[in-house]
Length: 241
Image 1 (cartoon, one colour):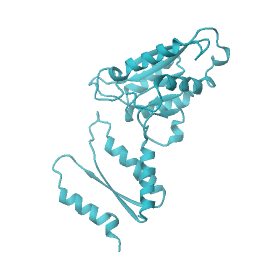
Image 2 (image 1 turned 180 degrees about the horizontal axis):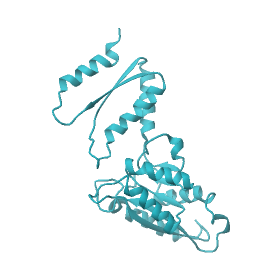
Image 3 (image 1 turned 45 degrees about the vertical axis):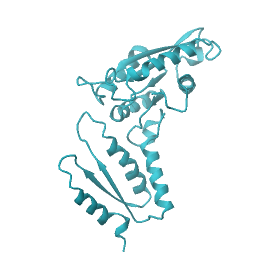
Image 4 (image 1 turned 120 degrees about the vertical axis):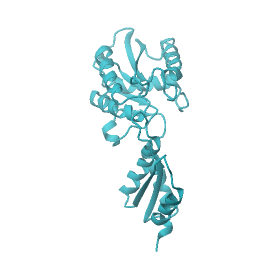
């Protein structure tokens, strides 16, 4: 997935600039020192936008393009390594991804991580990369407080930014007392629960600004839409006295 505003070569260069200050080898770079970028991505499951079959070729091309121009990173050459964030069932896993990150750290001592590109797997890896002071770029917003994931660069919108959008809408229309958030929730262990975490951004940001927030989960089986509409009517801004 290369829909980011940053072309991949520029993104790779940005990662190296971020990591140069923290790398133990950065100040003693010798001619053609190898700089390793470690990708942690689903190996086979192309249902994920950041799966290796989708983005691997672009990453490899970016590395070749940077290496072909010696003026970009004088004395350095890039190497891309990859490992799989999938579990045995082929799903992006919050169990496998951090184990893979530790293996890549021990085996290659990378200057930067690319991925994971899934919510649940990105967060534990981000905690490791922040502890190691190694940059990480991901297409998914990691879960939890941004300060815990200081090393992460997101190439897309985060859940917090969605929440800030909701806050602006509340201010624009002067909805000051109450907000109602309705979402579908798939609690399957192999699902990233995108609706749940998108709503979490609104829920957290609005609650931090003294706006009363109600939530209502729509279970996929036996949905009673009459009850859903009634919950919205009873708990949203239309119920103000």
